[in-house]
Amino acid sequence: MDGGNSFDILILGAGPAGISAALTAHARGRSAAVLGADPMGSPLARAERIENYPGLAGMSGRDMLAAMLGDLERRGIPRATGRITAGMAFSGQFMVSLEQDVYQARAIILAAGAQQGAEPLPGERELLGRGVSYCATCDGMLYRGKRVAVLGLGSGSEADRDFLESIGCQVLYLTGAQAKNAEIRGEDTVTAIFAGGEEHAVDGVFVLRDTVAAEALLPGLEMTDGHIRVGPDMQTSVPGAFAAGDCTGRPYQIARAVGQGNTAALAADRYLKEHEK
Ligand SMILES: Cc1cc2nc3c(=O)[nH]c(=O)nc-3n(C[C@H](O)[C@H](O)[C@H](O)COP(=O)(O)OP(=O)(O)OC[C@H]3O[C@@H](n4cnc5c(N)ncnc54)[C@H](O)[C@@H]3O)c2cc1C
Image (tube, rainbow, N blue to C red):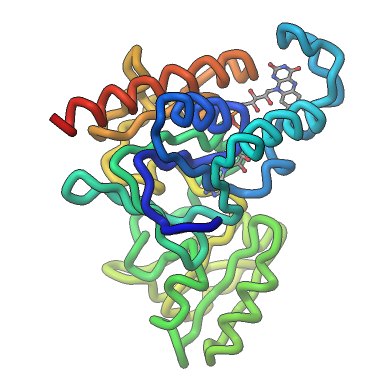
């Protein structure tokens, strides 16, 4: 991504909802950037044939995504690829970490898809920020010379393990069933991980999934039945934060995601105008 890391609107997730939101934000004259994992990892990329999207029936999910991404490219809308690990709202600004970079905006649109299979591990939520981390590059240095567990619950976690070892961490690397069934233990901070029938003393645990639960991405976000609670204009419980697509609930459908992305971007534009007065 060229230029600075500061935008009017940041869009989290490069699926149909996020892409639609970005196109509308751009059409409204807003600077917007789309942050997210490789879009070809979106569920849509696994759809063999889409039969219910007007005008494009019969197209594969991959082709549809490629066409949507082409729309971003043609308009010069910036996109950064990687894992989003954290977001926060502070004095009318949002800060979002993507790998080791931090992006900033006055409004955000969460379009991170449905968080299927991302149930938090025992102890994960309670000890988040107190030994539990989602980002080795961001927080690794805090554990230099210490014992950490790396739970590889998504793709590419070997690179995080190698990085932590390279900076002097003693790494317990767990994948598969051991990682999936692990329990993070500690009172005020992480002290151990229980996995494979054994307790291992550790100072930190890196939980590495391809996605991060929405409520962990933005503190204060109200959820309902595992989805982000939104009003009719896609406003979340956090002022200036909007949400669109599968992350807001069922039915999980492209047309709904695209429509909500459009509504969220228009609402974000209105919010910015009101706060510019
Ligand atoms: C096999 C299959 C077939 C389908 N067929 C159809 C169909 O025929 N018709 C139809 O209407 N719908 C279909 N769907 C549903 C459709 O794919 C979804 O409704 C649609 O993709 C939702 O779009 P979205 O933008 O809300 O979320 P997504 O497409 O899920 O996009 C969200 C993006 O955000 C990224 N992300 C999330 N968290 C993070 C993070 N922490 N860091 C970085 N990136 C992150 C994800 O990796 C993903 O790329 C199908 C789904 C599947 C799985």
